[in-house]
Image (cartoon, rainbow, N blue to C red; front, side, top):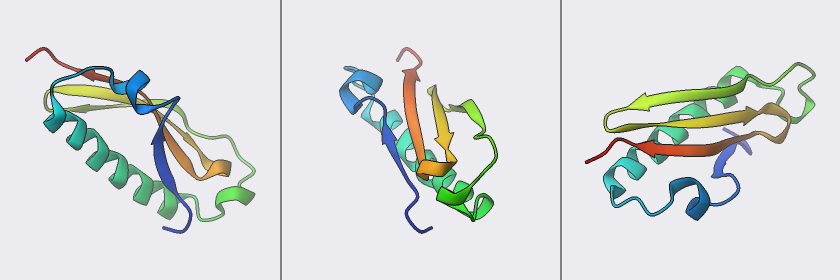
Length: 87
């Protein structure tokens, strides 16, 4: 996987907020781990990548969704919004 990683942008408190659904947050983070592994396999050139990054995407999970950006040259997936469905 190299230096690929994910993080909340700008920070966890801003992106996750005060959600009481910590099980959903764990699902988001697990899926982010999977997406990082996929990006590392797809973009082998990482920081030397010359093409465009994929842009804003979203993942729908049980109990909610999240939006993220994959910035290939930074080898990072940024989670920008987490939206749990009402409990």
